[in-house]
Length: 156
Length: 475
Image (cartoon, rainbow over all chains, first blue to last red; front, side, top):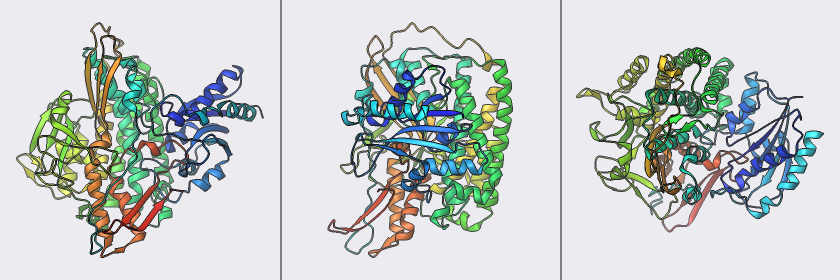
């Protein structure tokens, strides 16, 4: 099964880069011959969907911004269905791009080979408005735990 | 609202990312093209290019003609992907599906449903083949790394050139096809034409764009030209002199600043000759230029103005002020980008291997500017003699348009809120349409989950009391 591990986020926007940091940790812990592609991008929507073309399975690690600001550092393991619930396809409200859910749906309708199996590790964040390479303490604290969870997911 | 319940004023508030300058100061200037391309997930290539051009000046290395051609070719590939995406995925829901269509259909899926899966495939293919060019030439997909002071870190091989030639032909065909889609679906429908020409989103402002030596649109390099609301050239200057021409207005209610033309002055959120409000978008670039530098795009340019009823005055078309025409202008630019890319790929110099000049000058200060898809983008860096940054200033594409966007939102609100009656159904949609044609870059919405922009409208009465709050994606 062709697998992609994808760290998503802006590595210079405080907590937004947490997905990238987790993926870097995972990379350093995996044996080099592990049959998996690992990459990181700071994009969403169609471009994100396009990076998934040709893979059977994708593990995505991303920052999760809740507007109520609840629980920075809380980790959610989600499926695409869970994401659909918090990100309806009803509207093209992102000013630039489709949401990931809409983008994947679009890609499937085009007949693109997209993964059936998408696992998302979403880490609730506190600060994605200020430039810094360092996440806030509550988010930084969960990086080892998410790294373990991703490693487990890969070897499953 | 005022005492009568009519709209008195609107305030567009967008949270701003903070601390960029502090983040940059103390870092080596040569890292800037790679740092700034992370500012937003929407136009990394534009920031990479403006940053690289600022380094050219800072290190005093004039790029060779081959380097300029490689950069412009790369940049044209980026324009092809970006404009394609905007038209089909973002503008499409307003035009192709229609402004009155049910919310559930007003997205890219609705567009594909209307135009057919085959066209949808062409859109994705266009993106993929041009992202391939960007990856090969830029050294990395999505976030390019190839820009260096006065140069480009890798040359293009003859094999790559051959491959790119095929890609370019497909791009030109696709751009022509997209203009035909616009003809068939939008221009053939009188309701849509009326919508474009309606006064709802018309603002008689100044326009800004980068032009070449013939005053034709150029995305990569040239002089900054500003034309007045009647279409006459108001000023033309080198990018490095931007601070003599553009000032930024601070309003207590907004995190964002509002740039305006210094030599006209700030006269509030209003249009006309006496207001320094200007606009920098695809429509603005067409209005500020005398035409397009490639033949098919020039034809499309002429058709654009003729169809929208613009007359030629002293050899120049009168400006089109209707903001919804921006979607069409974007397609004219798409064709230009495709044709320009083809010219450059076919240029023998594009495979010149000598692309990495030796840098010997002591760095100090540099301004770099390009036309980002959503407006003139300026990077200004200052460093010490070791090239360590001491100060940074950026005017990003969308920022130019903060005042016009605010004005368009006000017009939309005025139409839908009268005498205390709020048309809730169409309000959010109309406000979205008002700002979507500017394709504003609110980068904070693009990467963290759930990946959709929260939009909230609060309506207050004359005493400041909240009477209604409409929202989407804010939970």
